[in-house]
Length: 264
Image (tube, rainbow, N blue to C red; front, side, top):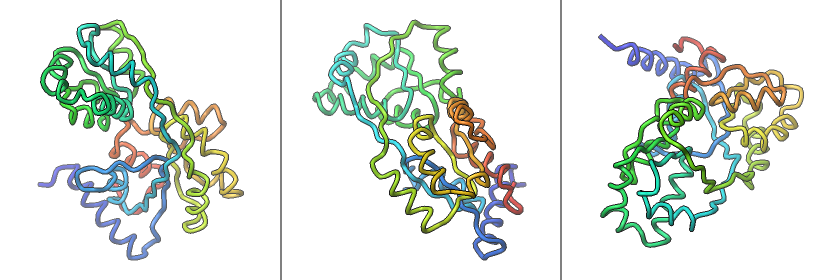
């Protein structure tokens, strides 16, 4: 017998085939994030939404500028001074990689530093960050916490914490042009997903202007509770919040909101 998940995937695939044949037209959804390819060479969010016949498009709304890397590099060289590591996003992992490469510490990392950090606790928010942390040789916990608030509660009950900002977010230079091109070529999306409060901040004004009188017809979705709160503060109706920051949870939320034919 097919498992429930396998049956769901099969149902979605059949629905996708019917939708692509034009019964009815494919629903379009917009994800305001940059692309992250997995081993198959495709963004996992795009893959998951395609299973239900949804035509998903990614538009990056944020750029990142790294900062405080010399200080971070120094701290990475002295695991004995800390109780562990906390990676709050994939960008934080990139900052560590940059430090190792720029300061010629890759060999030292492989020989001893990695194992010394692994002897301590290494925490992450989300599966995407966990995957990148694993690639640099660290064993992470906390990926299943779902959001930063829940992970913070767990961590603070065990260790004192020193916070360090190693990057800052700025608007993506191509956001306005990308959104204008999307609306011109594909029209009003059925749903738009915001992946962070910053992404909302830098894109909402453009979306409102481009959507015009159709703005209220769009189903707005949040990837997590902090983004939901930011949307509510802007007076933006939140159709749903993903139960966890994963492609599967987001796809399930969007399915419930849009209810494509015959898709579980």
